[in-house]
Length: 186
Image (tube, rainbow, N blue to C red):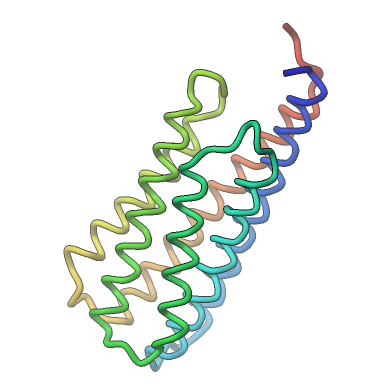
């Protein structure tokens, strides 16, 4: 890959990470600001976020066919499906929403972790995306193991997770864009 193509890949990947990070921070602020008096509000907020995040991930998968990863597609599709389910059936019970969110977080987290591990030989900043995937997977395991935690606990966890996840994605995006701006030395 030429130096210019490598910088372009880092810049585009960095921009996608910045966008996803901003979406996650927006989700964190929205969830923290809402009183979350009903499951409907949280189901819609989560569903819209998951679909937007999934579409961004799938779009990134198709952006550069020569360098795509199947794990980006898996995570993106899981996000879209989870978002569609949440928006289609907003009246699901607290436990079902907790389990749905947990399955989504575990699937996307594992796919993000595998994507980072898959790219560690060729991409130097792989540790932050791996940490991001691990944090998401741990959240998923916690939510699946404790479905009775309740919707308010889920809202607090979701806001905290989204803020941490968003900051990690933004940090990764800034680092990738910084690498894309530097001339590549061979």
